[in-house]
Length: 505
Figure 1: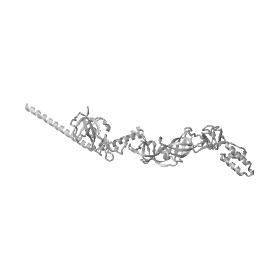
Figure 2: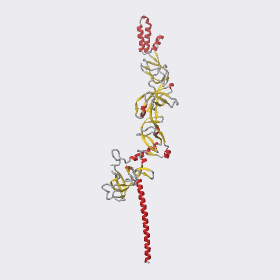
Figure 3: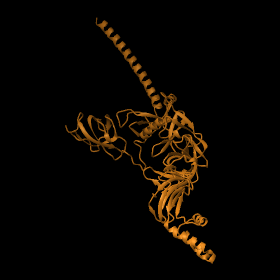
Figure 4: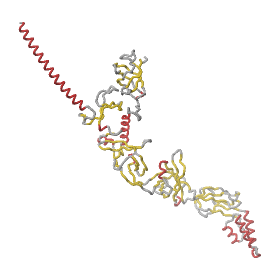
């Protein structure tokens, strides 16, 4: 019985030994395979190698929340409770470069146009109002003291023709001068020619015209009334005479404005002032006369800028056959320069103006797009001149560029977060931030905190590790406590606790 028991025990021991050796062999084999895989994986998971999962070359790893710090191996972020993410070579081009999948380009309606060379004639469009040509005006005055006996024109803006009677004046002073002249002429045979000449001169000094004097000479009668006529064709802009009133010599009676030519005072934007020159040809249109184009030229550019509208006035002189243009009408004016120049051109819709800079989105090929800051010139007929920033043959986005530019700006901002500022200054170094948290774990070189939002850094609530202060944590702090703490970024990279105390209950 004992021998049988001993044999059974030895058999069981053999079986267990065999099983143990088998398990040991399997474990060793798996361990070697895992070690080999880790070695292979470790070789792949190094900066500069190809990621077997994506087939893309890895440049480095980073924490998306602190992109300024670069790591040559994967692992856990020293800043946050999260894994580092790889940055691939095709993503690390120039700052702000965006890759857009061809299907997404189609969904966004992305359209491209080529930067090309072409000739551009500067065209500036402005609006203004029609006004009288102040150089085509005449002032009618009284030539002598007298009385207004009759008015032929009784209201302002009445049209008049050249030579048309305006008023009749009775001039008492002319009676004596004409009587003296007629008496001297009757005595001419007695060698009083000098007296006749003197009488003629006195009539001229009294304000009589040569035509009126000839009428007195031919008729031999006294003509004390003066008929005032219009010197030009136009409208009566001012009427200062009324029947029965007394007028003095030199008193203004009428002001006549001609309508053969008119002015348009066009409001030109300050930024386009350099494109408008005196003498430039002009086409003008008005809604009151659809389909009609009036030709003219720039007669003057007034040396004053309106502080409210940031515009200056260009005085345009237009021919006005038939007097169709009336003062006060609204008009649209196109200024066209005769000079044409070669320039780089892009569609105007491709240009994004932000106020501080002017940007176009350039297609770099292989689905990549990047914003490029440019300097623009004149704009006309849907084309904009590019003075700096682009070259002929490049392709720019003319539709969907705002979405691409927004994404590019976000990426560029994320890249700049955490990067040292010029002169070696780190935007986070030296500045401290405050928050409240729960202590999750305390180690010798790290304190794990679950903190709430950090407003100064725009952080959401999260759990992350912090470096303890050089003097150590307060002795009354334990795991599970709710604390108020202040921290900053250390020179080595991780965030370091500056001060900590239990939060007030």
